Amino acid sequence: MTPMDTIKKFMHPFTKAFSGKTSGLATQGFLAVLFLVSLSGCSNIEIEKAFKGELRPGKANKVIGEYCQSCHIHKYFDPPLHVSKVRSLYNRPVFKRARECRSCHYIEKNWMHNQHERKTRMPKDANRGKFRNLRKKN
Image (tube, rainbow, N blue to C red; front, side):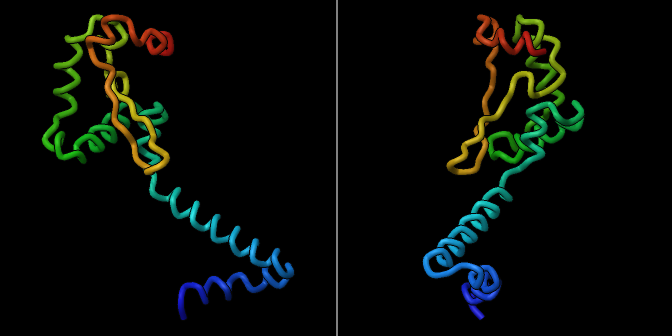
């Protein structure tokens, strides 16, 4: 039995309720929904929650650290050491007292490819006051 036969068998009660062109539209709609559901399963919800601040700080730092270490460039990266070393580069209090990775780092979702793009609030920009709205949030 081919996958298409399985779909037709599953859709039979639904297509019976519709006639002619409507039946074809119902099948296409079902396949479109199935496709969208399969794509949504690929995103990593825990990473997104960590960067949004929906996890405890310790757990969020662990998730973000593991996410960064999944990249070949940051394979041997040590998150706690990094946080303590980098804080001295910032002049702004929100960054100087930061204990969470997400204070300086964030992600942007690329919906087209269902991937995250890693971003950093660099000390040079932060010290010039580029991220004032972040300071107000924290």
